[in-house]
Image (cartoon, rainbow, N blue to C red; front, side):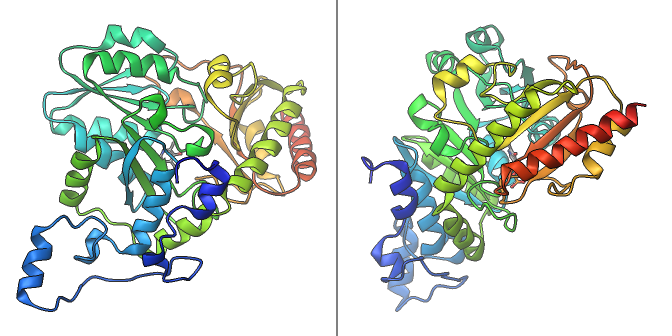
Length: 394
Ligand SMILES: *Cc1c(COP(=O)(O)O)cnc(C)c1O
């Protein structure tokens, strides 16, 4: 399953006959206890490699293996994938797999806020020091590496502000020094940015977003490059991490349509971003496919396309004006997360989180998740919202 195109892989991968028993969608295999025929068999199976063998519910069943297998197939050069009960659980498990007391971790200043919180919380408590870096640092990250640097986390584009990172340049620095790289690839998914072929050691997804795609399941995954799987598996087992078969089943169901969904999210989002760019109420549109976005040239070089999440900066105005814009939207829900079929709008305040690079903007920022509604309806809705923003300005 390595030569097919991705749209074929998302349909076919993970559907091994021994797991599906001929059913199109691998069924939900629920289990805690697995029964053995004899004491001898119980002992033998415990001593053997339990990978893809029923052993105990926490090690998974064919339902979880099927989704994990499919995600591995989307990252050429990957050794294996493990599933987690949320994206955050995936991020923290991967970091714990590679970090030890006394180590230093480099983390982009644009990292997802709960990832930052983990660095400033548990990682700090166990003696890991996190140094936050400018997401646009590129090869200059070498200047931040010390003898103690064990891992570099990347997230591209960055949460809220969408800076695109120079992954190959950072990977080259890391490889030369034996430093492990981890990428939060939730925005692009392996369809728009296969991370392992770029030299990343661990590709992390909040499957809650585009893999599931329907705003009704929490799920995460980490896909490990060749040679990096074993320590991730060992740490994941120690932590007792396990995604339920029902949630994995919904994840696999979502994955089958992900290529067409992403394509539509991407096309509508780009159209809306370009429309916003023409508006006088908008100072900047932070969409990686537009030149306003920091790292745009790297996006053009490395990515196969854009997904459906971006931000825009209002031209002046106030908190109240931004609330008036968002509160009256008819087709956008107000809520966290993204990657589902429905559009969402939220206020975001990047300056609250930054420590390495100050965030300065012309006005308040709005983040949009563009869903699968008709883009004309969404544009009309935003048009009315910008009129409310202007009216609130007086
Ligand atoms: C949502 C998100 C996560 C966390 O995923 P959950 O499933 O909500 O825990 C991690 N990284 C990024 C970039 C995200 O947007």
